[in-house]
Image (cartoon, rainbow, N blue to C red; front, side):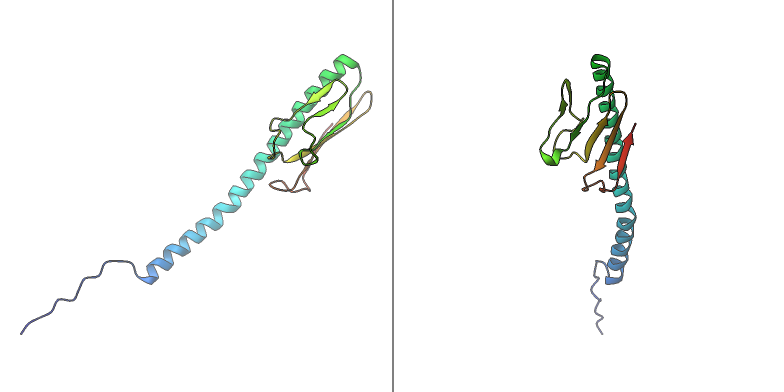
Length: 131
């Protein structure tokens, strides 16, 4: 009487593969919203940094001219610098990754800087204001 050995098969079963895929899907479902939130927060910080840089340019202009100056900066409209009179300002990232349009409203003695999100990584409803 001869006995035949059953062949030994290496590999994964379908159930094991489905469990791995389910675990990866759960991890991706947790990681992607956290990453999106991180990107959005970093864009807001970039906008605030640019607004503070613009504030310093306004104060420097005021020291030289005894008044503030109004202007707009929007990379989508093709304006690369905010320039009115002696004030010329360029944000920290003056390229296609610029996420905000900057609007400076000024009178002789006060000014207000408004940064509005352009909508890609920063929703257009995000408005940061510095007065």
